Image (cartoon, rainbow over the protein chains, first blue to last red):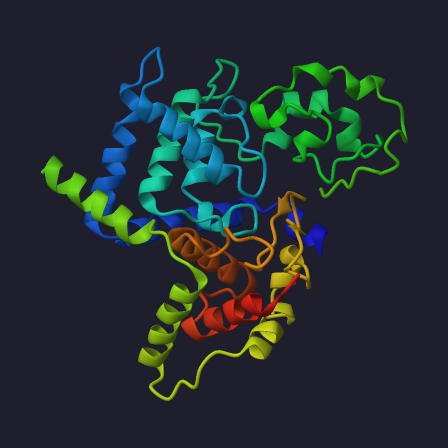
Amino acid sequence: MNTTITSLLPSRCIRTALIAALLALSSSSPALFALAGLAASLPAHATGVPTATAMDARAVWQSECGGCHIAYTPGLLPRRSWQALMGSLDRHFGTDASLDPATSATILAYLETQSRDTASRTADAAPLRITELAWFRREHRRAAEGTRSGPARSLSDCTACHRGAAAGVFEEEDEDEGARSEGRHGHHWENHE
Amino acid sequence: MRSILMAMSLAGLATSAGATDPAALLAEFQAEAVRADPGFGGFSAVRGAAFFSQPHGGDWQCTSCHTDQPIQSGRHAVTGKAIAPLAPAANPQRFTDAAKVAKWFRRNCRDVLDRECTAAEKGDVLTYLRSLAP
């Protein structure tokens, strides 16, 4: 069953879900939209020292996005990706992760301030899976090939190997990908792809 | 305009993020179930247990993540993240936040049944969970 659920959601489905989410949003009440807009406008004022609002937004992000998995560091994806992900939460990699519009807008605004858009990315690329990014595949080559043993249930299970992942710290074990001895944990990667 | 929006925002918080408890939720589900069916005869822990553990046509059922012993911790079927026990006897925080309850019933019922649950179904499940003792 795991394999079915975690197999990659075809992009067609994501597109359909996105459209469905947009339709759902457009049919919600104007008041909610207005509230969402208000919430979205608040963190944008944060510059330099975090304001109380920005800290609240971070807490909301941490709590909501960290409910089913670790709250993935916003800098792992460009802004467009977060916009696409937050626009299709009702079909979030095979599960319903829908939020009320105000909470969703608060989180998206936070993600947008923290996302990482690099010059090397093409202008309209909006990757949805961190585990499919070229640098991620490179740095987790053996895990992605299923030729490495480890405690992780899937490539998205960052904390299994990166103990500081939930706090956005990945550095300490980056070199482990090649160095860690096979069979050390007695489990094998389940490569769901 | 802004003050009106703020007032609406606060009103929304008051109603959707309110503290509650399992008994109050059951009373709400009961009222809603009676509105949907004036002949509604009350909740059943046995029905709730069956609903909780049976397949509903999709890949997942409640037990996929919450296990068939929801008095104990579960585990997310995909991510593996630990899920605290659902039964209030093991986890007093459960069913004390109305917005959280609404959010998770909405999400999980769509995942499991491909639709939202009825008040009768939610009441049965909560009645079942309340019947569990450590």
